[in-house]
Length: 225
Length: 296
Image (cartoon, rainbow over all chains, first blue to last red; front, side, top):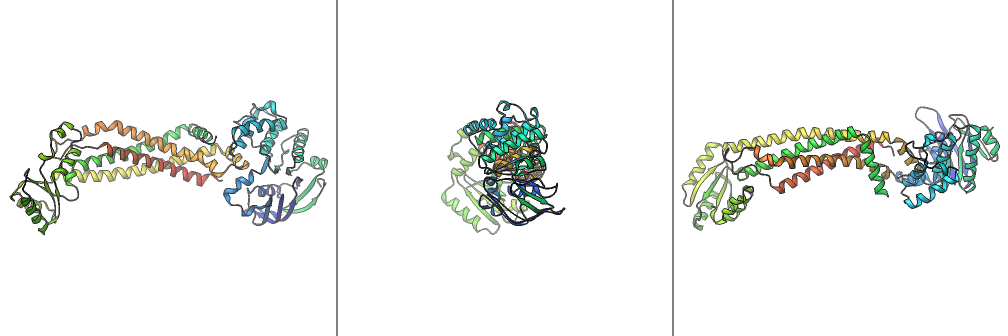
């Protein structure tokens, strides 16, 4: 599903964010990216949906070399990739329903599809009863569920999560992880960057550890360190 | 679905920065109104001095029914004269058509005139355009057989033509600056709208909205501002037009061919020009804003 070949990425000012990385992730895998801040986890994720382009190397997503992708095709790549962030990125002026519907609306899905899929996904994340609320009326965990719902409503092949539990307390985090696990069980490939030792150690999934841009460990059924 | 989305987003963008939107709309309107007014003035002067366009310095009016021989001999005379740069014969029919244009505002006058009653004429452009030389040359034709009289372009007409062309240039320069300012204002309103919508834009990119889908509401915002500005300018000029003829001197004050007239065809052309320029300004402002500040 994802293949990274000899990828290097550095930013103008700072040091190398990713150095000669080689990773292959199969369809339906659940992968944790661990490592200290600045070790290159976010760069890894941003390279996958072409928010960044590598300096060297090739990246394949769903069998396509995304380096060869022309600019106007990037949106169509992103329709296959859901994204969840630490800061949720919900639109404060829209209700829960509208936030999720927005993701379908702006890729041109008809109203009938939106009216069918949005309640279904809100039901899946357990927020059907809050669909008319605004984000600031929800707890952090609930907001992150909305964000997951928005990322998954279009049934993407891949779900990228950049520290999705970074702003949540441990109990709430467990709920989010159950949700991601459930999504993974539908066959969606999940790549999650995290600092959360407890989560990684209990889930026992594949762990890729980054240290100053280099992959120092790639372990199936791994632990945090 | 898409159209509904575009309309909703564009309307909300325009409403969000209503004061600066109004500022750019008004700037477009004022500059286009200036352009339109100077185009009207130019048309008016051109029409009022139509007989004297293109270097024509005097007109030889024949008697009402000159014999073909008289016409032929005068024509040969003019065409062979080394002092005549060009000559154009206006027959009764053409004179009548011109008369109809010139007196479009007094249909009762047109009704009272038959093509037969208008004399044919020769319009002459002399080589030497000094006043004395023109008069000397013109007068020699006054005595030819079949000629009724010779009419010279008056100094007033030359002065009006000159004034109008200089005024037109001046107004166009001012209008060009104002249009530039309008374009920049539009660019800035759109930039502000983008800033206000940066979260939406971020999410749209994330979930895979196409670049054009993200751009269109902002492009439309610029177009609508230009279009509303043009519409206001057109409305103002249409309201102003009845006064246009009253304010300017009429043919009794100055020996012109007729009063200052702008036909409805010309008004239509002027309005069309303003509409196109308004849309262009909006599109250019929006285009720059979208390509420079919308990082998609």
